[in-house]
Image (tube, rainbow, N blue to C red; front, side, top):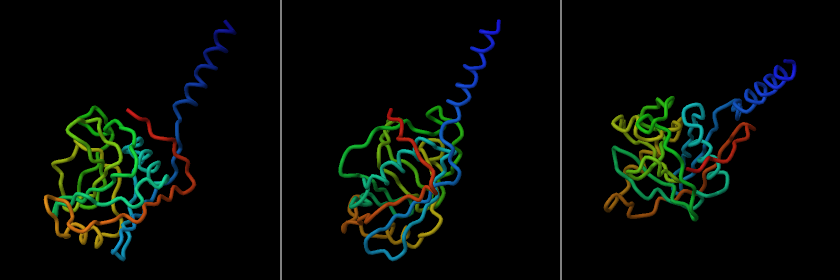
Length: 192
């Protein structure tokens, strides 16, 4: 009986330890510098709402993946989209309600950052978009994972560039994307 109880306690302890996962104390802060715009876009990422999506973005940004990429799709009064990097990124599972994920109740209001994807729910890789004007019809169907806290003038400036078929006529270049994790360590994203 003592061996069974000891085994049970050992199993219980290891299960509790394994379920603890990452301990994120503060939300990561992202700084996006865009060529030709004075004000950086500063975003707060919500790990508690979309953990794998945040891990994916932190991983890509920290590796320099986005450096030199562009906001390649711009639709005024809707969103600005960027994130095509110089190499491929892994596909991640969509963390939103219509994909069976609960807990992500971020609404697609002005300034929210969310993952772009195809019509396939689990097809997000590196591309993201920042909502220019409230687009709550996206709620529950796209993995929102953070919010712009400053840099709205840059968001507005990009949203108003001249486009042809939603592509800016003059490239809108992302000089850098950096992440302040406040010393927290993030695991690599889980690829789908």
